Image 1 (spheres, rainbow, N blue to C red):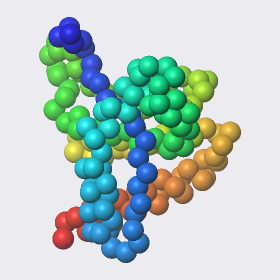
Image 2: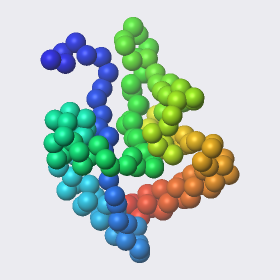
Image 3: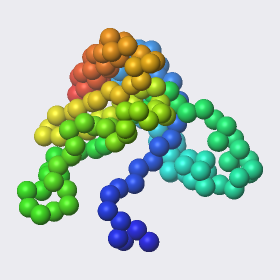
Image 4: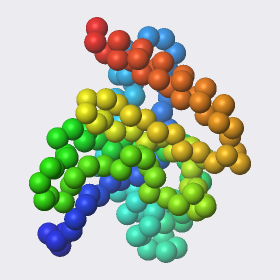
Length: 157
C-alpha cells in the first residue's frame, strides 16, 4: 500500500546499447527498438536481483553481475513543478544527483544526471576524481553535448 508515500519510484537496470555507425536517424531508431524490447521497461531487474530467493538461478546470476561503469539518470521535466504556495514540491535542488555524500563509495565511475527545468536541459556529471581527471570528464561532457545537438537536429528532420 503506497497511498501514504511521498516521493517517486524509479527503476535502475543495465542496458547494453549497440549504436550503429552512420546517420543519427539510424542510431535513434536502433536504440528505441532496443529499449522497447526491455520487459516491463526494466522494472523486473531490481526485483530479480535484490528480492529473489538467495541461491536461486536469477539471484545468483544477477548478484554476480558487475555494476555498469556509467549511470544515466533522467529525472524528467520539472517545469511547472514549483509551487509558490504551501505545497510539498517547491523546487528542485540545485545540484542534480547530489543525493550522495562525497565520501561515499560510488557505485558507478561516472553518473550522468539530467533534467529539464524552465525549458532547458541540464546535465550534471558526477565522477570519482581518483578514476578520472576533470579535463577528461569535461571533454566527454562536451562531446556528449555536441552529439545531443546533432541528434536534436536529426530528429527535427
